[in-house]
Length: 69
Image 1 (spheres, rainbow, N blue to C red):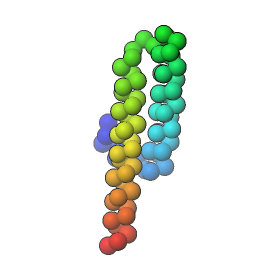
Image 2: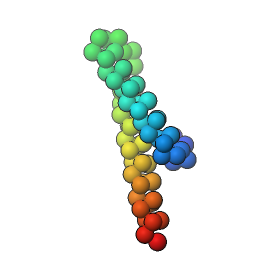
Image 3: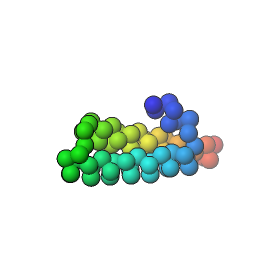
């Protein structure tokens, strides 16, 4: 999973982040209405968001390091 994310461009990662955030909102809404069948999906979505943030920050740092060289 993380390997696939690292191969994506920054633009693609930002789009993926937006998609997963929308999914998380929908999952939380389903949970509040007692319609969520698998509550583990909320945890998976939160972790996916964290992975994307981590990879984006790695890319940002590596881009800054390349500019200083």
